[in-house]
Length: 170
Image (cartoon, rainbow, N blue to C red; front, side):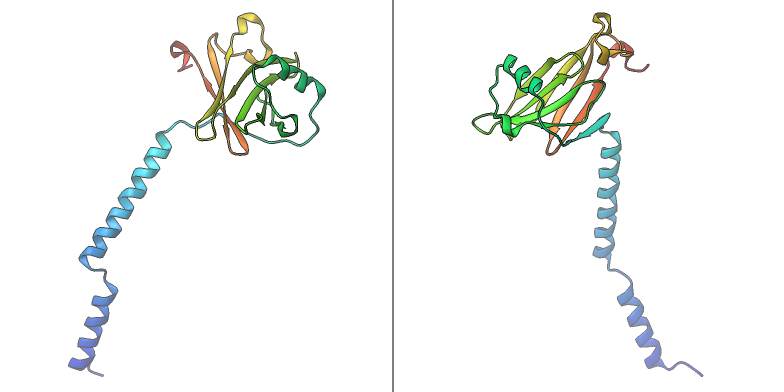
C-alpha cells in the first residue's frame, strides 16, 4: 500500500518531535559535561582511610576520669563512643554550651591522646602524632611523624592517615 502525502507529513512531524531541539541538545551536553567534571573531581579528591561508626554501650568510668585531664568540661550524658582505629577510640560529647567536642583515647593505656571542641559550623578535627620510636602501639608500622586525623562528621568519624612527605609514596 502506498504512503500518501498526508501520512508522510504526519511521520515527518512525529520524527521532529522525537528529536530534541538544538537547545535541548545543548542542555543535554552541558549536563553530561557537569556530571563528568563532578565525577573527576570526586575521584581526585582525598578520601578517608576509614569511617568509624558509633557503638553502643555504657560509658566506662575510666573514660570520664580521663576527660578530667582535658581542659574541657563535657556533659557525661552526651558521651558517645565510636569504633576503634589502630588502638585509638574516638568519643564525642557536648560541653555545657552545646558545643561539640571530640576526644581520642587509647583504651589499652588509659591515655587521652587528644581533644578539641569547636562551634557546630566548623570542622571538628583532632590530630594525633604517631611516633613508633616511642613505642606507641597505635603507631606500629607507621613512619615517625605520621599524623592520624580524626574528623567528626555527623554520626561518624572519618580517619585519614597523613604520612610525612619523604615517605608518602611508600
